[in-house]
Image (cartoon, rainbow, N blue to C red; front, side, top):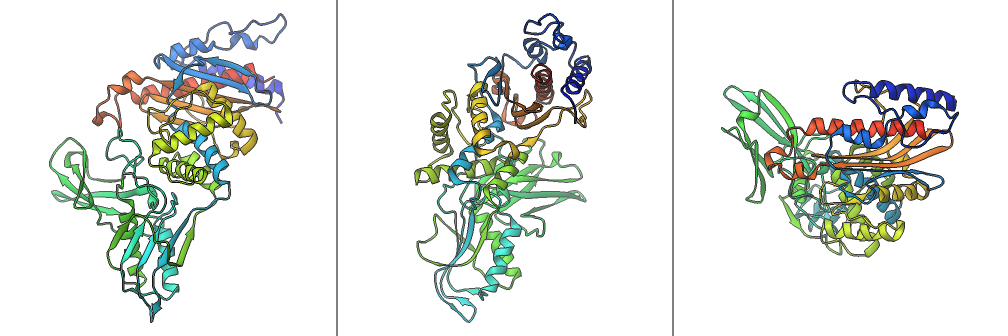
Length: 499
């Protein structure tokens, strides 16, 4: 076990090594607070936050807040009144909203309904694939439902095969300002499959290309027909999308493909996608289904012949916070709003308003104004002190910390430092020229800090064209400087507040 002195020596030495590196420059010679005579001179070597912010060169929208978890004392702030885009840090509050509204053991359910009797293997009625909003449903899960359908004795459907999304609205995408082709901006619906993404693969074949569109998962790779791709002889734009003939119609620039590769593309018609994949999986079980027909909601009557449950909400939220899945955040947020109000929200903005009102009443927040549950929309705002206040209360009441991903401290070469005395659990957030980090720091035995750090260059972000939004010039270096600033502040706090 490390002593407090060991911890302080490690952090002081590490801080000196990090801040002597060319990428970060030298630390100022004085700390931000007076040092009493006889106090450990380690405090004199700690960099001033304002100097760190100036050297990071991130623009004029940098803010942070630091609080002692046990006492609730606000230890440090910078630009405390500045409401910032949280990016994916927003998912931490969405997780709290879902836990309080639904409970940690809540499970989503996907069902197969039969509207008629089964006679000698034939369903004398319609078969309905009814979604319950499960954001984790994948092709393997649909295959399990097909197994259950065969076990129920159904090999043929005399009526129609229908797919329904259930209580949640069908939304074609999360944020309209994102590029068409990015997989992190899919449709949101009551019936979702593979995070509403289709796998696009390509390989050079002579003078042309072989392309595939499939719904791959761990065990299966069924081809998809509702999403089509055409290679066209051009350099830009790299991708185009159109809703054509009831399908997702894509084109890609030949000059961008090289010899081969693959990527996930968003699906805009999730119910049709899930229905088509299930039809293929059922056929592999010897079950003949007609083409899927999309209906707005399942009928009030019908016998459940198969069902699939998701994992518990606490596991879904842990994975959401680790992998920052936007679809999961939007689904659990809207489901929480549905549970609290008894009615499905009409849009992500309406559901976000309900979460804003909850946070204001629950934590006394005054600056929170989210436009969605994932943080993908850059119009969302919250101040660093409000984020810290909410995180402290959620830590004490809902145990959010174990769901957050450990964030390693790194050396000057970007390598994780083993046996680092600071233990950080936090949620990251990144958009073009927007960066956030918020969570908890174990600085010594019995002392824990809550923090939030936000930075944004909104003027630079606003100038990006649609073609620049996926990989903007200067975006990578800006983000690297933001992360260096985050670590520098955390290292400083680990020394100053270790006692």
